Image (spheres, rainbow, N blue to C red):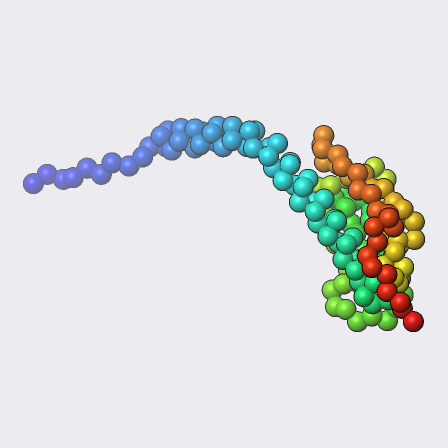
Length: 150
């Protein structure tokens, strides 16, 4: 009985396989980039709207004046919700909310909500990501049902 010879992959075969996989992966990412940008944009806008809506609802429910700061930072928008009322809502006030990938035309923006949920002034906020742009309009034309805060 003779010795069996084991067959291993040579270093050339391994490097060639890695090169082919790299080329295929690069082609996939090149074609997937517009889809990823669209997802990042829609997700970022939805997250920003959700945080602003939460701020408005908190101001109405807690009968407190609440300010929502939005600041342009590298890589996205940094948001913060503040109030001068002694509210004990953990992880709601004085914490930063980062909305990644989005950019604003202004470097900073302030949205102020009164104790009844109304905005102190109408605002337009233009956000973009690459060639995708949308303008968010916040006004008192369709406010939440007002509540008497005595």
